[in-house]
Amino acid sequence: MTMDARCCLCVLALVTEPIWAQAPEARVSVSSATVYGGQTVEIPVDIENPYPCSTDVRVPFPRKDGGYGLTAYEQLPKGQTKVTVKLTVPIDQPEGEYTNHTVMLDPCPNHIQGKALSSGPVTITVKSVPDTGQYPTSAIVKLSLTEKQYFDNRIEQLSELKSRLDNGLPENAANAERLDTFLSGIVTDALKELQVSEGQYDQEILHNNGAIPAFFGDFRARYQELLIELAARPRNDHTATSFTYGAKLVLVQQLKSRDDDLPNGEWPSIANQVDQTIKEHISAYSHVRNTGRITFNAVILSFPSGARIHYKKVVDVAYLDYSRPTDVSSAEFDLARWDFKFAKDGCREELLRIDPYEEKEPVTISVELHCKSQ
Image (cartoon, rainbow, N blue to C red; front, side, top):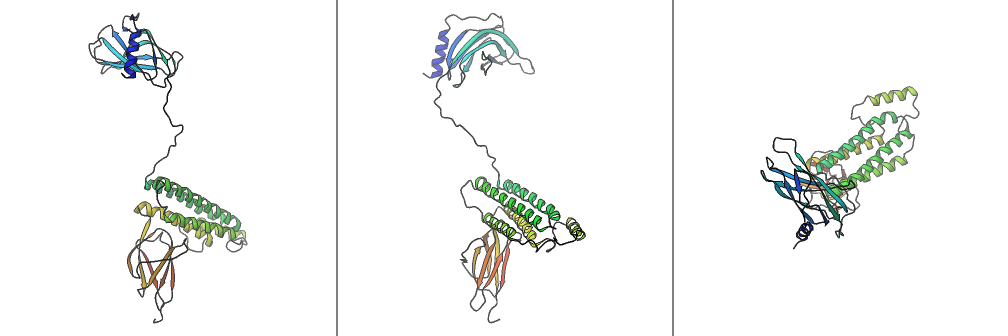
């Protein structure tokens, strides 16, 4: 026999003489009972007159001290006057007395008013039982992003940083120290963004089970190199620190009136490097978002053909040997900057760096060899 079944028998056995409610509308033939958490009480209810429709009967038991109460319920068929409602006491229900004074009948179809019938008082005394269950003590709520949503968010963050760069350069370009401080702040924020992005990619996309795409390491190295260069720069090689006031004003006005892309040389070279790196960072995210690939396609050509190919990521040290000589009509590489070395007997070795981020696919990797026979 289950605990619930044993409880029902115990509860009904407590009622040696039914105590009928004083009110004429409803009678509940249980006056009191003591139950433990997890047990079920069955309570007979007698309605004075048949209800005109099938309805749910609810017998609420508010807690005596105003805490969270209990409710027994069952369906009463149309035309019936007797029903037994059931109440299962939660295992962790607080101890105490719960007393009923009212039987509630839900409204019939196309009605909004139910019926409240006086009854009782009927009291249930709840006793607690030890809960041996093991429950968690904390929870972590995380937003799970699709890969496209992830890159949309990252592109938005970098685009805001790019706007800060564009808007801040005119007012900082005329002073060397101020420019370097401004650019250092932009690069530092870009590096922080990269670190956050890399961590989220590992968790949200790779689920901590896979290799981090190569472009994260590539841009980390580039931002770090920019910070080193900014820290080491002399203060007299790139800005208008010796300009007259009028010349500075003209320079700032020209910069403020510029379009999105400036000709080379209008900014100091370090500013162009920062600008280009952030643009390529955005392009890298856009490439993966749009293609679903963390690689790029390429063709490898040499003039003359037949050159051996050695290659490595810019951030790596050792070169690898490609599986066959030029020309290669279809090749695939991780999305990152690459250094290529081409060698052919009788020809001078040629070095070539490839930056694929803003190139259309397939990226053409092409070199002209200088050979003795030429």
